[in-house]
Image (cartoon, rainbow, N blue to C red):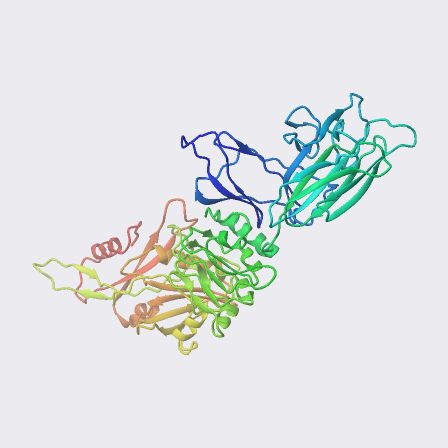
Length: 597
C-alpha cells in the first residue's frame, strides 16, 4: 500500500516504477496527494526470497506505506506468470470498500461500479458453504445482483490495457430457493469471443475462469432458453498477466554475489535485488552476459570498496567470471588457490592490498598462458615464490621481547679494533664500527630467490646446529650469509624462530645485521650480512692477538628463564694499560643491558 501524506510539503506525490524481482510491475502515480494506491500481485516465488523494488525514475523519492505477504499453499489462481490485481467487485454489498480480517488471502472488495439494468439481492441466512479453495467470505457470497427481467442480460464492461492478457474469475452462488426441478442456467459471453454456459445448484459455488487476450471487453450474462430465472452474479475478479521478458540471473551467481556483499558489508546503493536484471538497474561494477537464456556474471569490479580480510571462497562460484578487480582495498592473507580454477578468468587485479605469501603455482602458470595478473602494491607478497604454504606462521619483525637460550642461540659477532692515538697520556680504546652500513631490512625471500642468491647452494662457508651457512649475493651485489635450517636439525623451527626474533629487534654496531628471512614451503632460512674477516672462532684463535673475550650477560624483566650471553672482544697493543677500565667501557658501549666482565 502506498499513501502520500505531503510529508515533504511539496504537495506533489512522487512517481516511480515498481518491480517484482526482475519483472516490471507498474508505474506508481497518484491523482492527488491525499489518495492512496493499493497494489496486489499473485506470484510463485522461484527462491526463498522475493524482491520488491522501488525504482527511482527522477520524479521524487519512492515511498511505501505498508507491505503484506500472504502464503497461498493451495492457490486456486495457479499463475504461470505474476498476476497483478486489476479489479475485484463484490456485487450487491452496501459499502463501496471492505476487507475482512479473517480472509486468508487478504483480499480487498469493492462495489464502486453501477451495472445498468440490475438490482441488488441478499440473504440474511448464514451461508455454511466454505467456498472450497477460493476461501470466499460468507458475507461476500450473501449478496449479488440480478437483471431487472429474465430476458435482459447483465453487461459488465471490462477496461483493460491493450498490451496484456487478463485472467477473469466469475463467482456464482445461488442462495435463492426455486420451485422443484428449476435451476438457474446462464450463458456467459466475452465480447462474442469466449462463450461458456453454467447451471447453478442451490448454495453451491460455481466459478468460471477465462483468459482474455489484449483489448477491451464486455462480459454479458444472459438466461439460457427455458430457464425462466433472471441471470445473476455475486463476485468477479480480474488479474493482469505480467510478461517476463528476462530471466533472473543464474541462481548460483546470485547466491554468490549476496554472500560476497554480506561478507564484506558492501553498501553500494545499487546492490539490491537481482545483480543483472533488469539491465538498466544492474549492480554497479557488475557486467553480465545476456546472450543466453539465463544471464551470467562475467565481470566484477569491487576496487576501492574498503574490502578487508581474506579473499572469500564465494568468488569461486562465479564460474563464468572473465575479469575480477579487487584492487585498492585492505585485503589480507594469501592469494587463494581457487582463483586459478575459474575457467574463464582472463584478468585478475589484486594491486594495492596487504596480501602476503607466495603466488599459487597454478595461478603463475595460468598467467603465462593468457591471464593478466596484477599484484603490485602488496609489500608482503612474494611474487616469484612457489605455491607451497607452510603450516606455521613466521612473521618478522615480531613483538619486542628478548628471549633465547644459550643452547639454542648462535650469534655471529664481528669485532674490529681501531686504536686511536693517545693524546696527553690518556688512553681510549674504542670498538670499531662494523664494516659497511648494511641495515636489517627484514626482507621476505622465496625459495626461488634463495636458490638464485646462493647459486643453488654452491659455496658453504660454515655449519652449525641449525645447518649449513652458504655464501650469497643479492641483486645489488651485496654479499650475504644464508643460514639454512636443516630438516635434520635437532634445534628445530622454534629455536630458528627465536634467533630471528632477537635479531629483528636488537640492533648494534657489534651485532651482525639480519637482512631478511625465507619461510616458504619446506625452506626456512635466515639471511645475514656477510662478515668478510671471518667468524668469532677466527677472531678468538689468535688472528687478532691478543684477544680478551668479554662475557656480556643479557637479561630482560619477565622474558627470560635463564641468563643469555653474547661475546665481544677487545684487542690491545703490547703496552696497553688499564685492562679493567677498558673492558668495562667496551662492555658498556656494547649493549644497554647488565654487563659482567
